[in-house]
Length: 344
Ligand code: NAD
Ligand code: WQD
Image (spheres, rainbow, N blue to C red):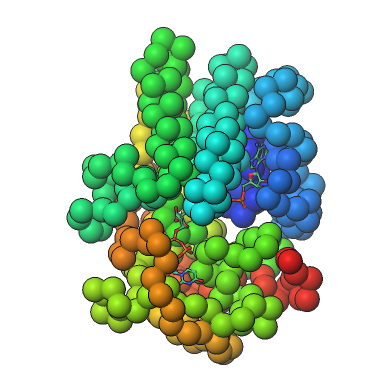
């Protein structure tokens, strides 16, 4: 089986990607120091794929430790690099830590790949690189250095690092795919893995499921006075299982193509939903009411973003198949599986 190193593989998106890699016949090798995840995710993956995945409790910014991982694993087909901090407000509070972890982990991963002649990488980028797009839906051709937070700029920088490496003599044989995720939500339908936000969730869907479970107070809708049909913000919510499959599609797609290769794709559904629609769809999908109230706008929120998915569908041959309703049903199943154990 072809080994794929999955940094951040115990996290929300990484864990689902390990499952899809295994389903496609790859062997995922997790590298995660559990700074924002728990070992239960690795056991959850094991329950779904029927065996314990190989995994290393390692900080990806530790070059000597990463060297040992690659040396121990022998021939590695490719890397999927998820390991990063991801909170927008967290990055405003402590930008140095975001630049340190997100950029250093990328530098160490790429350097270690070079030493071991590993020549395929899929990188977790984000629609945050577009900032507030001038044209909707937002395509890959639009300006992509318009991040509005230190977190966003770490994605801009890591994307550029991969482009620069591809253009360098050492990158002649490198194939890289940069996936710009829109809003990943949901959980595996088995409810063995899902999103495990530590502390109060920043993101809408985990807050909704925790509020519906009675673990949080009412959801605050951040503004209903935007220029959208119902006044609340619009986003492109992509089911995490579809997103995970996009990673496998990217790895398969790059295989026969000539190197160097550095290609970027939007990964979304192409459809926008408002915050109020999310609340309504959650109740339709689960039969559970979510307490909510309308509050002021959240600083930094872009009113509307959704993806132009024509490139990922035409070139990568990937499209999303699951709906917002599927995602909210699966997120709720996952929340129910956590029962009372929470998350201070
Ligand atoms: P997550 O926090 O659930 O997963 C990240 C994982 O990386 C965690 O398990 C964490 O412990 C690990 N990690 C972080 N730094 C590490 C380090 N130095 N060494 C080892 N492990 C480390 O986040 P996620 O939602 O799964 O996001 C995965 C990636 O996707 C991130 O790069 C994130 O920026 C990107 N992304 C996420 C979203 C989103 O909304 N969730 C959207 C766009 C892009
Ligand atoms: C979604 C919508 C809020 C919480 C973030 C990052 C982005 C990317 C995805 C990593 C917005 C509204 C939210 C709440 C609300 N991550 N909301 N009440 O801000 O679109 O994107 O995650 O790359 O970079 O910025 O996601 O889930 O926080 O918000 O009304 O309690 O829900 O205003 O319109 P966002 P989100």
